Length: 68
Image (spheres, rainbow, N blue to C red):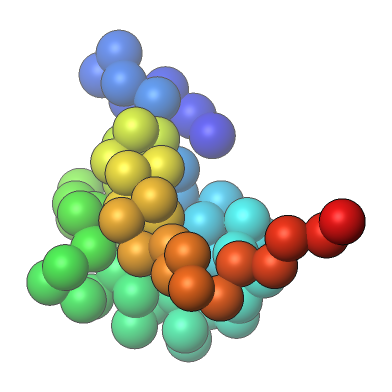
Protein backbone atom coordinates (compact mmCIF):
# COMPACT_ATOMS: atom_id res chain seq x y z
CA UNK A 1 0.00 0.00 0.00
CA UNK A 2 1.18 3.48 -0.81
CA UNK A 3 -0.02 7.01 -0.31
CA UNK A 4 -0.93 9.03 -3.39
CA UNK A 5 -2.30 12.57 -3.07
CA UNK A 6 -3.11 11.92 0.59
CA UNK A 7 -5.05 8.70 -0.14
CA UNK A 8 -4.05 5.16 0.75
CA UNK A 9 -3.95 3.19 -2.49
CA UNK A 10 -3.00 -0.23 -3.80
CA UNK A 11 -1.14 -0.76 -7.06
CA UNK A 12 -1.87 -3.55 -9.51
CA UNK A 13 1.09 -5.46 -8.05
CA UNK A 14 -0.23 -4.99 -4.49
CA UNK A 15 -3.67 -6.34 -5.43
CA UNK A 16 -2.17 -9.33 -7.25
CA UNK A 17 -0.13 -10.20 -4.15
CA UNK A 18 -3.10 -9.79 -1.81
CA UNK A 19 -5.40 -11.93 -3.96
CA UNK A 20 -2.66 -14.40 -4.92
CA UNK A 21 -3.31 -13.98 -8.64
CA UNK A 22 -0.96 -13.44 -11.54
CA UNK A 23 -0.47 -10.20 -13.46
CA UNK A 24 -2.68 -11.33 -16.37
CA UNK A 25 -5.67 -11.99 -14.07
CA UNK A 26 -4.88 -8.76 -12.23
CA UNK A 27 -5.10 -6.76 -15.45
CA UNK A 28 -8.40 -8.45 -16.29
CA UNK A 29 -9.71 -7.35 -12.90
CA UNK A 30 -8.43 -3.77 -13.24
CA UNK A 31 -9.92 -3.50 -16.74
CA UNK A 32 -13.33 -4.68 -15.49
CA UNK A 33 -15.77 -1.75 -15.38
CA UNK A 34 -17.14 -2.97 -12.03
CA UNK A 35 -13.73 -2.73 -10.37
CA UNK A 36 -13.25 0.81 -8.97
CA UNK A 37 -9.67 1.33 -10.16
CA UNK A 38 -8.14 4.38 -11.82
CA UNK A 39 -5.40 4.55 -14.38
CA UNK A 40 -2.86 7.30 -13.76
CA UNK A 41 -0.39 7.51 -16.61
CA UNK A 42 0.81 3.97 -17.16
CA UNK A 43 -0.04 2.77 -13.64
CA UNK A 44 -3.23 1.38 -12.13
CA UNK A 45 -4.37 2.33 -8.61
CA UNK A 46 -7.32 1.57 -6.37
CA UNK A 47 -8.16 3.33 -3.12
CA UNK A 48 -7.76 1.01 -0.13
CA UNK A 49 -11.31 1.73 1.10
CA UNK A 50 -12.79 1.10 -2.36
CA UNK A 51 -10.91 -2.21 -2.60
CA UNK A 52 -12.20 -3.34 0.80
CA UNK A 53 -15.75 -2.37 -0.16
CA UNK A 54 -15.43 -4.20 -3.49
CA UNK A 55 -14.40 -7.38 -1.66
CA UNK A 56 -17.22 -7.06 0.90
CA UNK A 57 -19.85 -6.62 -1.82
CA UNK A 58 -18.70 -9.75 -3.62
CA UNK A 59 -18.33 -12.03 -0.62
CA UNK A 60 -20.65 -15.00 -1.11
CA UNK A 61 -21.98 -15.76 2.36
CA UNK A 62 -23.67 -18.94 1.13
CA UNK A 63 -20.22 -20.48 0.63
CA UNK A 64 -18.86 -19.43 4.02
CA UNK A 65 -17.83 -22.27 6.27
CA UNK A 66 -18.50 -22.20 9.98
CA UNK A 67 -16.21 -24.38 12.06
CA UNK A 68 -17.60 -25.71 15.31
